[in-house]
Picture 1 (cartoon, rainbow, N blue to C red):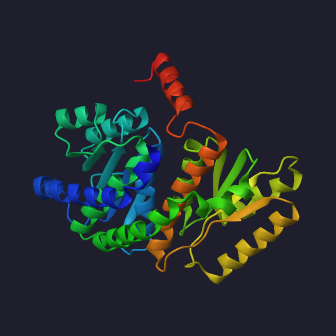
Picture 2 (cartoon, rainbow, N blue to C red):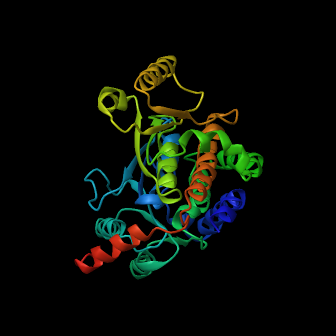
Picture 3 (cartoon, rainbow, N blue to C red):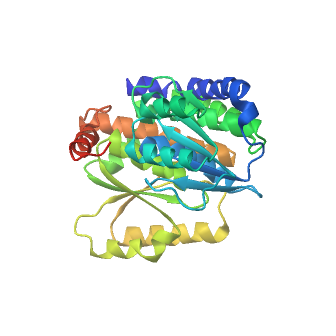
Length: 336
């Protein structure tokens, strides 16, 4: 089922953009035009779309954007902030806590969900919301979420959402058929075979949000213990820990070609250190010829790579029983 979901990337992006068009026809008059402050609320897979969009907003002058991945609303989020609340299930307790705080402070909010309590609250409090189409798992709904956010921000003249959508769709149509062949990942699967612990590294201001998505995919699809870090911060503390490793991890590195000279040199130096400490290093291929395209292809590559690694490990790709169990324990302890 998950492999089929990955084959629908271009369609999900288009569908999300169309949802934004329908949403704007109904609610556009009540949305602040050309907002200067934008916040994205979400946890796990539902929060990744906002992180990705923030990567592009951070390169625009006059826009300040925030990620909220806690249950407490920061004081700097005020009535001048357009806030997107994203929860595929609509039942994520941290996100619901934030949604209630946003409503209490009369902060402009748009809810994105497949259903659940988030939609119920939106209906009761007259908060505009959009219903996402059903996917096999929340992580498979990223295309719809990205398409919707690109569509809304395009209509608000905040971001060139249509152009970015076209780049994403074009790259999906080029690379999804190639990635659908397991042979494409033969070298990757050979290098990582036998490793139970991955470090996934991105670059702040570049690939960080996209590498973070890769980490979540390897956690959930491959069932590999996997943690995320970003350059250049990891060079100031994390790298030292590799000198005393008895069981060396595998490092997966993601970056675009649009980095500064110093950042490229820093990554090369770090790669040398890893090799000297006998750490397995895999640099994911850089595909595409634009900034947006190369970053989006990190998502596509890691979706399929994590799927095939999960198959090689003999795990249930869609299953997230540990997370399901955690939610049950939280409910038993009284979290609503």
